Image (cartoon, rainbow, N blue to C red; front, side):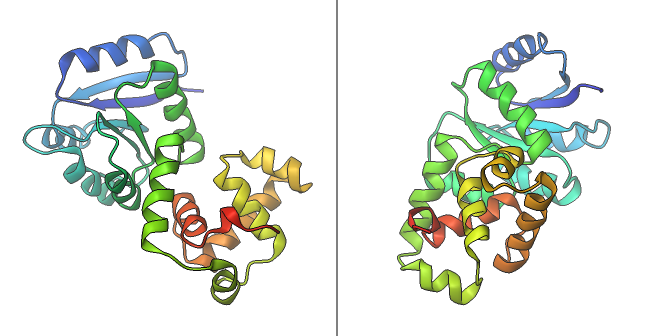
Length: 221
């Protein structure tokens, strides 16, 4: 298999160089290009087609927050991992809703960045303590409801669907969920797709946010 193609967009030359050098030791990941601002990145995407972009939030000319919707609109298949020094919960939620596939602190070590790249490429999203806490904090603030009744009224989820959704929120892989609920991975994927239809979620991140919003994580089956 060809390595996962990565583009780094960050205005700090030393940070780009450090990440690129560290990732060079990984056989299944390759940094194919670098950009120093969002405008430069958008221009480069017309020539290079990376699988994953490491996108700094704070950059001159065009920042990552402005660049993200443009990327998702024109190149929806590209996974975008946001990078920042700030742990702003409302910002994390906003960026995930705009289509970000993960959100990492720039202090993350290279193994975390590598894991995020691989997981986003293979499973669309990489959730970590930072993203999970942000989604919990913001969505619970917005939605102070007692959800079990609400969930049943709106989505009418059965026990198996509720359990699978809770396991997804616990960052279990499809195979791990399949083993726990004693179903095939393909059946789990089918139930996940059905959950999207029932809840109106467009993505796995949308399902996670739905679960948090309706307090499903705290419900006993």
